[in-house]
Length: 359
Image 1 (cartoon, rainbow, N blue to C red):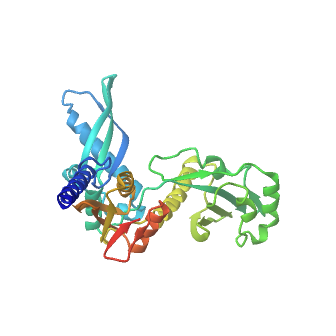
Image 2 (image 1 turned 60 degrees about the vertical axis):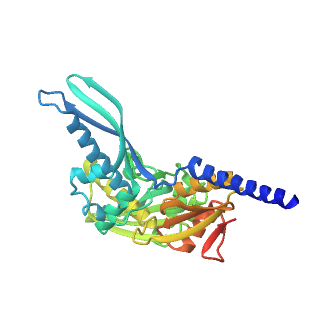
Image 3 (image 1 turned 180 degrees about the horizontal axis):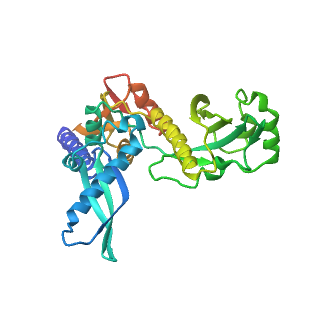
């Protein structure tokens, strides 16, 4: 009799865990599917004429959304490789779109679109064009532009510095970098003027440490009668990278020329940041991981993290039993990079066997 009850109890436990696993598989709050790129606030306007076709307006919105996405995730030097694209190719990478607002004013039709692109299809398209995308992460830098007037032997920082004045006036939605400019400080000005003769070698730590930002860009703009030389010190994660550009002497009073100079510098900094966040989509590492079924909340949270991690190309549940749910993860990187990414989010693994265990 005891044996009979023991068998029944074992069957009950097995059925319970199978039902629990099915519940995790079918009702997890985060679906095991690749993420998407969402581009919002695409605005298109067309005159409402006899031959007006709303579909043409939507198609123009798709193109505009694609180019905006490419500007966000691809370095400027690679963008020309993928600008020539057929409309049907763009549509093939779109998961869905929404018309958020449409209106007719003065015989003009205007629409605001939101477009969602399939991340895997975008990555596959870029890989076929030999283009590596970047993680579209926002970043804030302390930015200090210093004009060094070599003929006058003077430094311009806060006053009469047109780059300082104009730098944040025309932000673009496609830019990932945000810039904090220092506040006007007479002590800082005097300190920098005292470093005039060795300004290129100065590390600027006395100034940058005053601000609650770890990373900074110092732009030394050497101005003489013939040319403009700009030396940019990009300080990121305690490492410094130098960028040098030379321009024909630019009249800062010419607003068009000044705007173009600022846009060129911002593009250099955007490309540097994108390079720091490149995704090598040619690497598709397969990882097998299992998670204990008794930790339902932890599994749901883990799936959410997988879905939010940019370097994860795809993941899905390939097996489950009474004890574990088994995941297969396709990762655009090395095992160490994956483990570090997960550790940063407080997820660690037992890696002794081929199937890792979520701790």
